[in-house]
Length: 603
Image 1 (tube, rainbow, N blue to C red):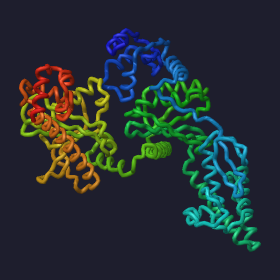
Image 2: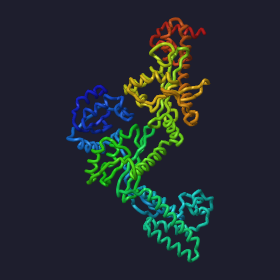
Image 3: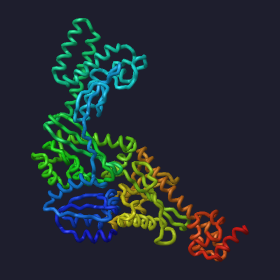
Image 4: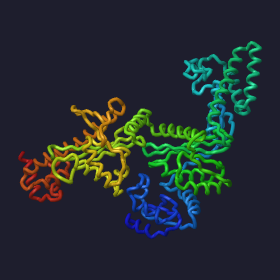
């Protein structure tokens, strides 16, 4: 079906609750959604392209047909939606990987035994477990290595080597120095295993170690007493660290997210028995706002689970929260509340969860602290609501009013994104007028966005920069009002030596030289958009000069010259073309082709 046919079909849907099922040409289900009123929801996909996110844009472009199922209530639609998503695993729904499984602590059976966290049982070594939480396993292994000063490396300890940093900061006894016998080392491993099995970090473990330390001191075994003292200190430090994540509620799950460059990371902290019990994180692609995915994410996270705490914390309030509470309460068998705390201990826990999301997203996307911080500095300088991860910049170029063109460049995460670069020929008028040219280019760019047909224009920027000052801003502001857009708009001002000087606003200039990193970023953007625009203008000028040479040939005017250049791409290919190739060009007759061949043969 065409988009028009899909829209007509959607307009015939009832205003009742239900589930809609989007399919591609092969009949594969690519998206399942629910709606309180089917007609209102589904028509939005095919009639409001200017409101679509990138992900929805992609989905709609692949929809060939859709089906729907009417339900008695929105709650029934929610249950059916979850069932259909589980059944079809649609490409454009949020599909969380099920990381269920067993985790183990492994003690290797090699000469110098090691303690490791693993997810599979093997034939070699001793295993403690299984555990349901990979976080608990990795945390326990990390703790015992610190307490008993065991190595974390994979070195061989049979020959002396230079110790690593862990030895120098007191985290490892460095058996690599050959100052510990195999027997003494493995006895320490035995103590660590016993601690894992029996000790945890209970108070009686500290009492037992304290008694052993005192006995060793009385026996004048000061080396053993010192090691036991260090273990006690390590346990106390870990206890203090764990107190930081203790909470006032026995059980709750905490969700917080961060979005950067269209990718969201959702961090999850699970608290059980007043302490942090597990943590997870998930990545969701092609999103722009948290409200776009939170309800669907929570549905998929808890689908099929019964161990749901009575309290769920989220970093934002979102639509369908009350409906989700009813659904979760039903599958959990108790009253469940979704809360977005604004202050106090619970707000602190949200912030801690969000810090985890930032760290995980930073590692995934390999964004450097420098790149993220310069965008935050720009945000503060321009008083923006969010750091501008996508910046579009525009410049006009012409040759004495001829070949009037514009260049549009895109910077993503403070770096050039060349796939987003675009070139424009000014079509609305002849002659030189930078203000009218800038207005025309932005009008065409926003028009493409509203059409929703070209994915290259599907995403709006977080910030627009124009090469120029108040005049350019004044010319573009009415265009933005016409399209109903409220994107931050600024100019880039140069000094008399054509160097970046300031950022222009409608009310005046913002000096940026005092902020070196922002100044460097804006300078790079301004230089790049100028280079891109002027290169296009020179390219057209060069083609025009070539075209003028062709017009020296009898019967070849500007129209035919341009057609030849578009077809062959260069003068060299036109010179070498035979009669058959030349007549394949629209508008070129056999006589024209013969004249062209003769012209170049006589040169």
